[in-house]
Length: 199
Image (cartoon, rainbow, N blue to C red; front, side):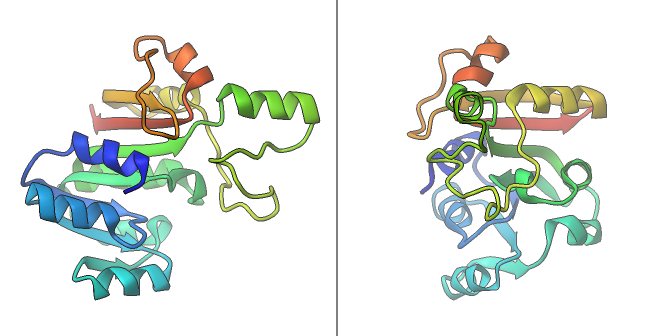
């Protein structure tokens, strides 16, 4: 299972009701259902991924995070997850608003555009960075809203989210030792995970 998904799975308690937005082939759903007794469901825009997930017996529907979350009722889930998808949606702020409406807790993971290697490549080459996490050319990437850990903290403050827990990690899943220092985490963390709720 992908590193950020493994870290997300650790944040979700046994028996939770979970909606995974942009669930891909359902790897997180499968793990939560099998190992944590979760009532886990998914929504995915890529029909090929939906087909693979459904063929594995997972509760996944075809849908678009930007348009389809409004159809879910308030408080339908304990946790709503958006893993490595926020930077690819058209309206990330609205998606977060809908997630916090339909779930008691929101978990978001994203690649940190503030990482030192990304900054160095942009400064040194004057071109859009390419790393293991940011692996596509600027004209091919689905990432239309890249952000940093500091940017996300600012958004949470602006929109009234309580950050219940957060972490920075490298691409191997090692948690950053700079947990209490957001500026250092922003510089050295390759990935970020946040658990939020509405005030």
